[in-house]
Amino acid sequence: MSESVIHVEGLGKRYRVGQRERYVALRDVLTRAFTAPFRGGSRNGKPDYLWALRDVSFDVKPGEVVGLIGRNGAGKSTLLKLLARITRPTEGYAEIHGRVGSLLEVGTGFHSELTGRENVFLNGAVLGMQKAEMLRKFDEIVGFAEVERHLDTPIKHYSTGMQMRLAFAVAAHLEPEILLVDEVLAVGDLNFQKKCMGKMQEVSRSGRTIVFVSHQMNQIRRLCERVFWLADGGIHRVGQADRVVGEYEAEMLAGIAPANGDRGQAKARFVNWAIDGSEAGTPNVLATTGRIKVRFNLALPDPLRMGHHGIALYDSDRHVVWGNAVDNLELPAGAHAFVHELPSLPLRPGPYTWKVSLYQEGDLLDAWECVPEMLVTTKPVTHPKDEWAGLLNIEDQFSVVSKEKPQI
Image (cartoon, rainbow, N blue to C red; front, side, top):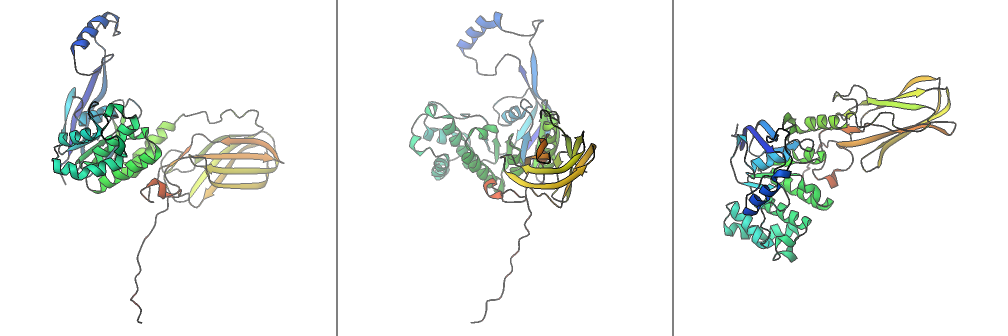
């Protein structure tokens, strides 16, 4: 097995509450002296510390694409900054073997007074690239970033989006052996995000290593082979992307809202729903493309005559992806389970919402947009680019059948 390109051992980072880590100039010394009597701290006058990251250990192999997920404040960005040598660890160490390109915060690595052109060459020099190599890559970088008209303008006059486009172009095109990318891609427009994801997939196919932070779970599924789930400054779980992301999404949605919601004076009530025998072990997570059985439990205070039951499934863009209806229902008062058994539901990974309704002789008894959402956590098997992947997640068995050239 190849040696690790990233080896992290007992890594930890502690910050003093109320104090920013930065360089110290004379104005900072004077400012601190003036504000010290007014600055908050612990009640006993001792410094108050916070561990943003503690006792983190892992290895990343050459060519591996690793995702970091977790709630805000879990330590993801701190970990990337430590790997990029932007900040020093309080304890432990991280060994990096290879040239590192990073996109952690807008403007990181840029000199605000230099032009876009000068900053491209500055970043290349920092990465140890020769001028001839930089000249060969320059047009490709500028074309990707779409900043041709502003190349000779100081970076400080760029918009946030322009800085981000140029920063990503530099980080991805200068052929680093290790690419560190934070959530900054979420700042760009949709087309730019797709463009960046395509470039990172290209980088990963070239055998380079990527460590990627994102709150977009479909991006993580598409790009990453292995995922580290961070929580409270430590690694909570490590494993295959589909499995860990599914568990993370299920936990994030746990207790999202009361199952009944506020549906006014409903004459009947859908009280909860579940996937029977969910392979994920969580009743709202769909982890298979095979046969499924979905159960919607109903409380019916009075007998139902000439009932009509409707069901629909919506994607995150509120498109109906499946629907059906049942007429002429006759039910006694009591508790009932409406069970829908489907031979398959091969949807691309992500969140979906069930909506169920019940009518009696044309009068609405109850309509419910079910909570929690249904999470599909199956492995993506369609086109690697989202815009061409479609809605269905159906595996394609491709083959080529060739025939002899016919005789003329």
